[in-house]
Image (cartoon, rainbow, N blue to C red):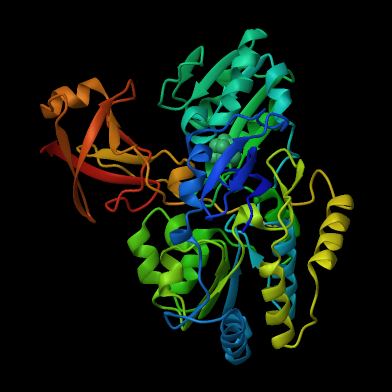
Length: 482
Ligand code: SF4
C-alpha cells in the first residue's frame, strides 16, 4: 500500500478541528496539522494529538455474529433476520452523532422502513440557532457554563482573544478558571446577578447527560437578557445527527432509552457509532440494562464494550477514511477526503433486506444537502415538552463526586487524568498526604485514587475520568485516607 493522506476532522468533540491523517505503507498512522482549517488553525488538543492511538487497528470494529468474526455479507444477513423477526414497536435505533451525515441519513432511512425514529440520546428540546465560534472573540461579556480547558480546549484561544479585546469573562460553577475574571457558584434563580445584555455571550453545553433544568434556565437567561448563546456539544456531528433524525417521532434522552430497555419496552437495539456503555455515566448499570435486550446490533467503526456484547457487529470505515460530511457546533459543513462508503452500503443492504429500497452514498449526500439547504430556523425544534432531570441529593455528611466530561471520557479512552480534584479543606480534614491517595466509597464499591488540590468548593470531588463507583453525573460518596 502506498502512503495515504486523508483530510479529515477530529472525532473528539463538536468543535470539529481539521487535520490530516497520514497512513504509511505499513498502515501506521500519524498526524499532520492543517493550518488552513478555520476552526482550529492547525492546533489540536491532547485528544486530537492522540488520534493515532484512537484509530489503532486494535480499536477498529470487526464484522461479527455471536462473537465470531464473519464477512460483511454474513453480518448484514444476520442483522436482517433479527430485524425481520422483531416486533417493530420494540425496536430502537440510537445514533448520537459520531459519524458522517450520509451514514446518519442512511440510518434515518432504515428507521423509516422500520416505522420508527433515530434517537440521538438528547431529549427533545428547543435549541437556539448556533452562532459562529468567531463571535466569541467579539463579545463584551462571556459567561462560561463549561470548563473550556477540560471539555472544549480549542475554544480557549477564542476566549483569550476575547479577553484581549476587553471581554469580561465569568465562569459559573465551582471550578476557578485561569482565564476567567471571576468565578461565581450560582443557582439558576441567581443567574440575574450576571447582568447580561445583547453584547454578552453564554457558552454552555448539551449532551446526553445534561441537566435539563439547568439548560432551561440558561436558555431563559439568554432570552430574557438578549445575550447570545453558543451550545457546545461533545460529538463530532451532534448537529448533523439532530438535523437528520426523523425527529417528529418520540425523541427520548439516553437515560429514558436505557430505562425503556430495562423495563423491557425495547427488546432490540440498533446503534450507529454510539456505545451506551461509554455514554452512560454508570458503565456497569448500562451493561446490565443491555443484557435485558433480546438482540443488540452494533454498527460502527470502533470496537467498544457494546460491540463485545452484540449479537451482530457491522463494521464501517474509520472516521478519517470515510467519505462524507459533518456539521460542527457552529453548523459549519466540513467534508472528508476519504472514499470509504462501507457504512452507507451496509445500511442500504440492511434497508433492502427488511423491505425498503437500496440507496447509494451519493443519494444520501444529495438528501443531506437538500435537508441542510431547506432547514427551518428558530423554533424548528421547539415542539414537544421538555423533561426535567432530578438533581442527586447529597447527604450533609457525604461528598459529591461529579463528572467533568471531556473527549477522553465520552469515548472511554485512556488518559493521564488519573486523579480526582479536592480542595485544601478536604485534604486537611481527611489528613491526606501530598503524593498519597484517597479512598472513595460509594454504593457501588470503593476505589483508591491519587488526588490534586484545586480551589473548588467544600464537599465537591471532581473527576475527568469515568470511575466505576459513579452512579451518575453526580454521586454521593464518603472518603478516607488510604
Ligand atoms: S477533541 Fe475537540 S477540541 Fe480537541 S482536537 Fe478534537 S475536535 Fe478539537
